[in-house]
Structure formats: C-alpha cells, structure tokens
Image (cartoon, rainbow, N blue to C red):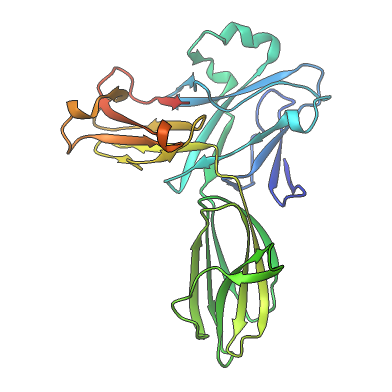
Length: 310
C-alpha cells in the first residue's frame, strides 16, 4: 500500500488486490476527493464494485462505484477509482466486492454477495475539511479543493501587529488581481481565524498580510469540479441534508442504519404528505427544466439499504 500525488496535486492511494482482497492493514487516511489506484500483479483479471453491509451480510449497491477487468496490463486510468462524495457527515464507510472477472457473471443478477469477497475490503472516507494553523514561518503553498470544500486558517503570533487574510483572484482583462469581497476587518491581529467555503471553480489566492500590508506568504487554492455523488444520511427521526440541489446526471446515495424502525424510501406527491413530515430533494437545472421530487420514509423488511438515484 502506498500513496502519491499526480500533476494536479491530488492524492492517489495504491491498493494491491493481487491476493483477491485488500491488504489486512491499511494505514492511509482516505480523504474525500482522493483517488484509489488498484494494482494486480497476476494474470487473472479482477472486478471491483461497491457493496453495503447489513449485519454480517453484504449486498450490491445499484449504480455504485465500479471498476471492471483490472489486470497487470491495465492503464493507470483503467485502474483508478475517484472517491467523490458530497458529505454531510464527518466520515462514511465504503465496502467493496473484489472478484475474478470470470466469476462476476455468477453474481451479476444476485443482490447478496458472498461475504468472503467483501469482508476485508473496507475503507473509511473522511470529509475534506482543511484546517491549517499558521506559524510565523513563511509557508507559501498550493492546495487542491473541490466545490463545496472549506478551508479554515488560524494563527496566534507574538509578532507585533499580527496578520490578516485577504482573498484575491486573477482578472484576465486587466491582467492583475482583484479583491474578492470587502473584508469586515481589514486590520491585522495577533490572534485570528479565516474560514472560506468555495462554491465556484477556479483559483483563489489567500494572501497573509502584515499590519503594513506586506505579503508574508500566499496560499494558492485550486478549486476543481464539484463532487460526483451526494450522500444523504437517514436516522430514525430525520434526514440530512433534507433539501439538496443537484443537476442532471448527478447521483444521490441514501444511507441508513436505523435502530428503531426498518426503513425504505418512496417518492410521493408533495400535496399527499403532511408538511411536518415531508422530506424533499430539489433537482435544479435550467429554469425551464427545473423539477422538484419529494421523498418520505416507508416501512419495509430490510433494516439497512442503499438507493442511488440518477
């Protein structure tokens, strides 16, 4: 097991599946937005697809993360699986089935998967919340984020006057930088905090300035496309987030492990449900094509399941 970065500064974790499963000990910390690259050093090809765990059983996730025919001659692109979720919770569990490609047909129509192909293949994916504690050292750096990610900077210094953070972007017309927004506090402080949620693609420059407006260092933030899958978590009493905005061809993954009731989801007409119990998802595209879908809890005989809507 190893990890690396590509030209875009994205973290790539390498997992060897030559034995037909993940290694017994995986020490890497997996952040949302990272990429997994699978390595296979034997002649047999492997398929990998996402499953979920219900007690001691494993079931296929419809439209889940999938890679097919992984061999030792596959290109890097064919062996890579981006982990791309819009997360409301701090972390999620991912389980995978690793199976020889020539055996996949046996389970292609089966919902339940033999646990020997799944139980060792578990990853914990952490929400990407970047927190940086600044010192008095000059620490210019480049970081890669995605739409919806948050960066938080804090500092405590004994330096007279302290620092302040100013965000700027490049203007192609003037060829210079402009301040993104009027800051509420333009004075430097010996103790401070700066927090920013990035909603647009592009590049932002976070300047750390002294009390005399001298540049101490710069953090270059490259904001890439949004995450591909929106994760929605259901509890016995709530659903979070209960309103989300998605675009055409986006994927929504519902996840629950309720304790008091067995649950499933069903689409409803909004006027058929009491407003206090209604849960909704807004699907937003161009104004003329904008649509709203509403979902509620229904009782079924399975305690834990996933549903993906495309």
